[in-house]
Image 1 (cartoon, rainbow, N blue to C red):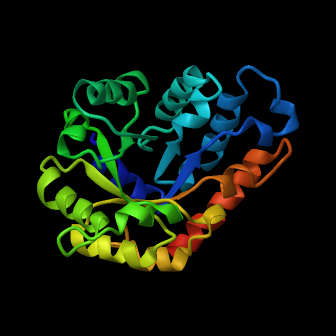
Image 2: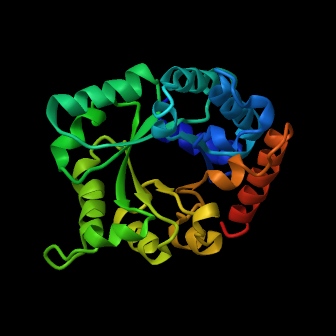
Length: 270
């Protein structure tokens, strides 16, 4: 099953557009996990097990693992998700961006080593920086388009021949680069007008939307701007607001409640 097929099935099965971001910060872990060699895996696995029936995808951010020499725990976590919760796609949030043989190695890292179902990629080096990921026909390639950070406007809003740069990326992705149907786009919830513009350009292409929760993006505005005609089309990511909803041994139950409330808030506007 391809990433796109897995995502569509998860949208329906779990009645959810929620993506839970896995950004483990040991400084915020409950006391009973601190100091354990496997703390990152145990924390994330507990969150996954508590929320898997409420989400359309999980999105581990590679930097939170690599910075603590925990890539082995990331491998174990993705394997855990695939084994215990088959059908829920895993997006490796790596934002890789390079050309030629280096991009090929990044693709091996994401899809061979970590066994992710999709990976985030920076497309601003052009088509040949994206092609190595498209060589894996069952995998998803999620390109940065209009990012949720305020500084994204420094470059993404530049005029390029009568359109903004992020609009050019959206158009190239939809009309030229996506011949295999593997591409999705990142568009931040902090800019609902731009979500609507990207949706207008790309049709029903899936959009990964970070920025609700701790970053303050508005759920109603996000859903209304980005949903497709059938009420899907979105992976709306929340990380910290769910991961750290609780601080004690019941942290996973608190995360589940936060995920449930977020999913239901999203569904009110679908």
